[in-house]
Length: 313
Image (cartoon, rainbow, N blue to C red; front, side, top):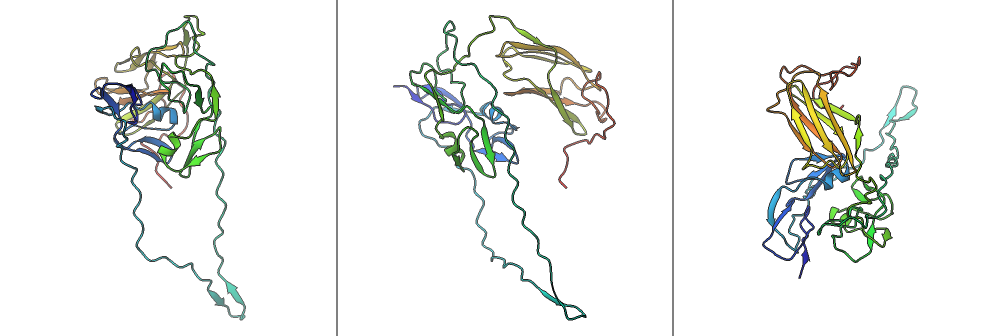
């Protein structure tokens, strides 16, 4: 009888308990907007990127979740501090003054998150669905073939001040395991495994994509924002002064170009990572100079470029 693996990052249906299982053995970590797993180093900003972090451990499938619980901060054993008392101060005119107390301002409400990106309505019936394909809709997690309705969340994941939930419904929980078990608030008769296939085999070539970067004294970390890059077909080639890119996506778009760099890099030491919503480049500098722009054909600004991440005030 087929069973579903409960290891985080796997979720596959298996019938052979000796089959290899790729999963995350550590608990999830959410800190100051960053998301990741305690067992590996990648940290991302969006929930979709978090779900796309590749598993770091190979083991065996299991129906029992043996992932350790997130660490809780130890309780404080020290004495409670009493609230400061109001100190009367008598001036030369025998007038009683009171030291001003600090005002507690109400916490700012989080801004409305951006709407969820649109998705295809259904699979193209002319296309075959590979077995064990996971439904694309958030919160569903059903694997093909599936004859059950699709119960999912049309909104986005929302994490604020320790609480977790979805923008499309009101329920909020504290633990990540409870968040992953929040039942979808919308229902459809069919799942979305491969999309509608409305491109008719035509591929759209993109002329440009949005990019951003920060730098340290020895490297430049750049992000090119392009969703659903097909890792098996993507090509990234480093040279001393440019990067050759050929990035096809599952949405039948392709970004193919050569990026001229502001300064020379070490091609042998430079690396890249493909995430759910972007291509991340780690470029090793040759001379350690500061880069005011990423591309040599970009107009330079008059801004002061800080090397490294900004510190806290």
